[in-house]
Amino acid sequence: MNYQQLNGCSIRDGFNQFNADNPHIYKAFEEQALNAINRGRNKISAKLIINWIRWNEFLRTSDQNFRINDAYQSYYARYFVEKHPEHAEVFEFRKLRNEESGAYMNVDEKGQISFL
Image (tube, rainbow, N blue to C red):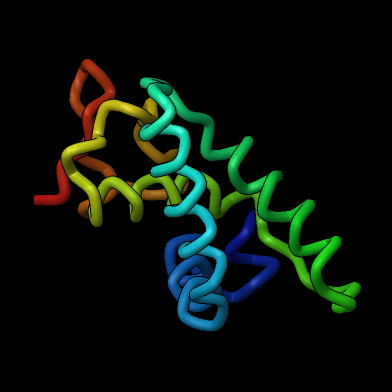
């Protein structure tokens, strides 16, 4: 089964809903990405940031059911670059296999993303 069959919506729609319901997750993602950039890192792993957030949420909250879907990692990176285009080079992007078109699909041969 794929994401849509399991959840009744696309990964992008699932991410958008999760992000709307949990704005503190993007805030933490943005904070950690900017922290890494400000410390001189020129390549960042969205997966590493998400796992850092998971760990801190695990320690901070008593909600045993809190989950961040792995499918959302690349969307958080894309959302970060949409908000901070001056840092477009810190993440490597590939076309998303689950989507055929859309702003998040415009990735050039160098891995740079365009939101047009």
